[in-house]
Each structure stands twice: as structure tokens, then as C-alpha cells.
Image 1 (cartoon, rainbow, N blue to C red):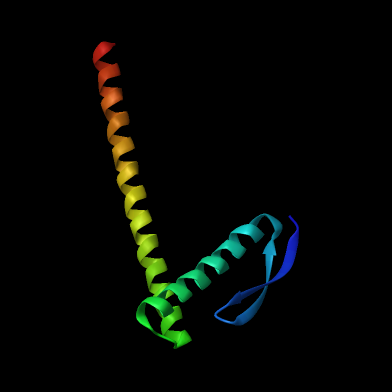
Image 2 (cartoon, rainbow, N blue to C red; image 1 turned 90 degrees about the vertical axis):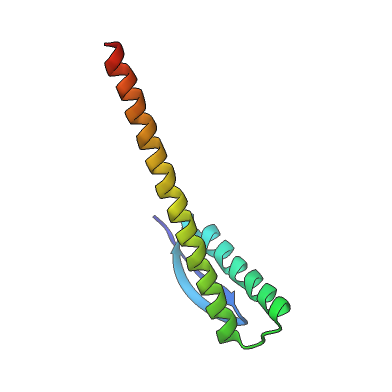
Length: 94
């Protein structure tokens, strides 16, 4: 498990970090997405304060995460219900 020292630039500030080699691409993509969202909010709302922009990006990221978690939970429940249904059909045919 090799580690790399990289720098990620977010909101015109560089952040040095050490990441696992297999996580480098994901970390760089995350930094790129944050910067893209910052730019989008700056253009959409005319906000220049970086703290406000970063707060909005962080808030949206958590809302997105909650949505994904809700979807996963719903999918898990659906799969469990289908398995129970299949088990019931198998038990009936035995």
C-alpha cells in the first residue's frame, strides 16, 4: 500500500496531503468537483466570499449524501422483500 504526497488546490488555496496511491484519482476528482461547484455558485448567485461558497458546497455535499443513503436503504429493503417473496415461493413448492 504505497502512499503519495500530493497537493490539492481548493478555492485558490493549496492543501498538501498524503493519500494511498489507489485513492489519488478519487481525491483529485473530489477537489475538481468542489472547485467546479464553487465556480457554479459564484456565477449563479454572484457570491464572492469563499467561506460562504465553501459552506454552500459542503451543505450540498451532505444533502447529496443523505439522498444516496436514502436510495440505498430503499434498494436494500426492496431486495430483502424480493428475497422473502422468493423464499416463500420456494417453501410453497417444497
